[in-house]
Length: 102
Image (cartoon, rainbow, N blue to C red; front, side):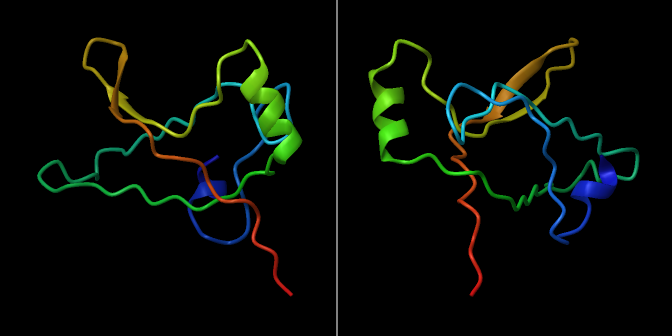
């Protein structure tokens, strides 16, 4: 996976299980191991670039009227030091739809 997410080269991480609606995947995660060279005394920045297959208005209405959990945006979780994870930042939104080039 590292070779897919290392450079901004038009290669995207994918293959997540699809949800009930276009543009909505099932819950999934990407785990990054920073390794021993990651600086412990400086802030780290995670910069991501990607896109999603967008929903449309009829799908949005259907999702809003359904009795299932609403889709959630991106969240960043970090190891809690006890074998689990804690949310460091949630509400990170959604990647934009695919940009079309003319």
